[in-house]
Image (cartoon, rainbow, N blue to C red; front, side, top):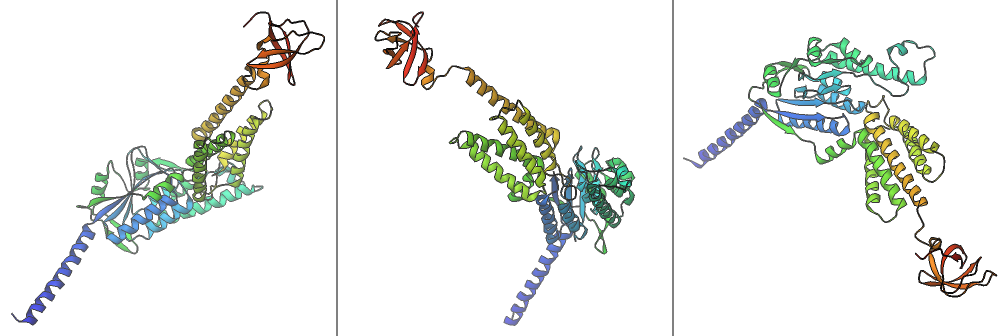
Length: 454
């Protein structure tokens, strides 16, 4: 075997090895894996970044599909648009599965479900209610029909509704789903069960489990860009995609309810630290909570009016502890806090996330009420109890007259609490008698003969 032949053989083996490696990678990509993404909560920048990154990873790996297991009450419009744009332009099939039982694809979740190549739901789930709702100034369909004399807020709400209706219509047309129902979900907050959604061509199938879903859609032809793609899921494996630590933290902070609770904790901690400097723990807790609240405000769209009302409310509650207003400041503070709390994140043009009134705001207001009551009760008890510190606490004490005390005005000496005091009396008191302190006049005690020794 010549040297040239050996070199040629080695080169051929390298080429064949390379071809084999490429073939193996290609085979692995086609049989592939299903990247599994779980969204259980609001649609926000953190969950958007998480989902988009998972789709990009799946594209790079040549995955068979991306399975998005969804349970959401809604979220930010901007984050939803980013997700849908990525899904509609993805080079890998996307599958949305509303799960588990009892889950919902509400509001932003409806848009995301409609944008998938395959939309599926588990029995016992629901989809819809995608109308942008404002707690203050929002109008129903009837109010929108009356354009004459319509308020500025009503005009804004109408524009938002029209935009989202057109947006969901384009998504439904892109995926060949029920356009009329999609528009109704935006304009009239229509919501349906999984079975009814299947009948209306809102989704593609109802599946009781992930395995049943994958088995049912194996061989389905979907549209990827301008080309048709057949799902080959017969022998795929699942690759769960987890949020990074940073994504998890920001996802947690993106909940308006969490942000409001953080603000309440921060305000309480700082108040306790200012009232009793040196406790450290309440102060540190308050500062950390306020910093996290600041991060939340960088993620969530908020209203300055709502924040100012909340601050005014907290200020009035604190003022009640120092100013006698017979509860007027307290009532005004609670009202401002509740009103401001409902307005902080009430931005329907940017988000459908709001603070839960009954589950968050009312309990916080109740806790403030209880705390204020305890403080007032403690102060009241302090005022009603006998003084135990300072000079005035000597009133009522019994001492011993060391010298005779003449009512004519001459001072005598009284021994009390280990000290000798000048004293006067309105009656004659002999030396050695027990005396009771009636009053303190500068450095002189006014006393009387004690009725009995104590």
